[in-house]
Length: 356
Image (cartoon, rainbow, N blue to C red; front, side, top):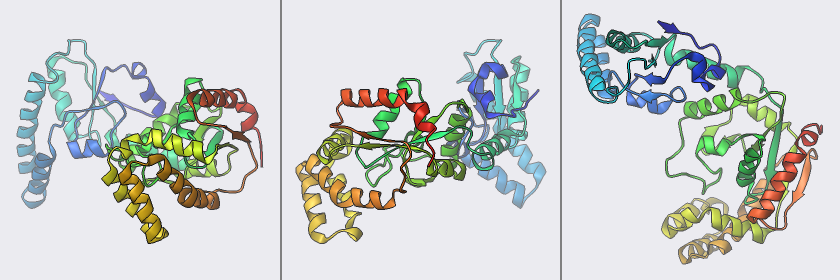
């Protein structure tokens, strides 16, 4: 039985599609690159097996490739039934998909159907889902009014975004989706997702928005690490009203020392990252910063980086806007940020209606 997905909002509520588990039967590398949200990976052919079948298909014959592939699929399906699928009850409702909704998903579906489970295959597979993502991010206009939470580096914009979400405000945390904090020091231990993986997360976030309410995003460049923002969102951000968060340099430096404590815990790694700034700064300045990193003088280092690197560049790059409002914070302590988030949330509609 085929399952057709015509809208990404369907994937927000599995009950609407009447399934319990979404199974991606593609190879591990395909799944890691991108997959439908909420899917688990049970490959009917692993990466090496898929490559082997492909070589036989090209170098010998389609029949021989199918014979070898069928034997591999049968062995892998047996391991699934004896392992990860062994505990599922009779009324379990799986949905499976592969690249195009063809042989790989059909092979496992046939076996699961013979067991007695009411299995369905996603029509068009991952390719059909990917077309919906592309349509949402590249073809359609951005669906909700945008407000940009702007400000110099270290003004706790990410923390404010999280506080706004806790107050029921619509937000898109782009840095969380990109798994990067948006600067030279922003790399995360897990690394960034693929561009397609980021776009899947973003498209699902966009699909869940109420178009009648504004959505707040953090001010970014068109690129977060190596992830590019889709043009519809980037265009909406460029023309959106902004909340400009400001705080004293000392407060921002102290805040960065707290939130980047994980990076500061490895002085040599921190010094190595500072070396990447050498093309823009003198030898003496780089030496001063690396010495501070190795000495654990993190607040002093953060203050120097803000004053001499990030602030000048950020202010030159920032588009000149007067829309929205300026939010001057005396410090970046939790209680101050909580009050600021409440103020933004209470004035969100008024801010969103400001026009240049």
